[in-house]
Length: 310
Image (cartoon, rainbow, N blue to C red):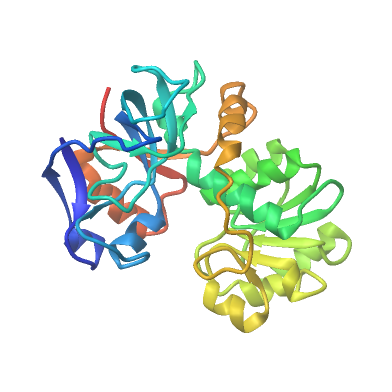
């Protein structure tokens, strides 16, 4: 099978290449899928750079949608040919950006939910849900989601609204109207953001989630709340430590247990048109380099997905 992987750590464009390798055999409790679509994320490029370093070679691609073609010992409740999706493990010699991939956790892909849309869900939904729970978002609180145009931020807005929160979102024009349609009160980034947020909220917000790429926004976000620990970031870990902000990432004190258990619910909502993670573009596996360049430019404006199978 073809797989996108690296043999040494470094810049993704330098170390990644497509190779022909033997398909992986599912271990106990695993399924193997014929991959139809694989979501790409900033975490993929961080893995190439040495995040969670381990045995090499390794693959990239942490989100997979496909059909089951083999099952490991002890697996029940899923049939060969079933359409599934889920987070792909990255510790082995290949991951999700391959023609076949292993899954430790998988969920049925509801009829009507396409492979690309399903592959866009796992990381955005899991990260957003886990972060909102760690932050303490609940009914009747006012939460600011900064970076609501990112995939995690876009998911977080919708999840927080479903949890009964009042949501104020910072976003650019690309998704501002869609976020308003989902029920958020939207304002822009940049100068005056703190004052605009506090005016909309009628004072400080209860909680703030930083879902944007690292942008030196945390000092401003701290000014939108009553105390620094009312803010949680999923990206700017160094600034979080300096400012007393909570963070969701390596060495985090926040809840680190995966929230993959919610993926099935949000897939069903997506099928009904009640939830989405916006997909910006899709690429064939052979065009991974173009996808990687766009992703690292921070101008993707939505999820980038590799189409691998039919």
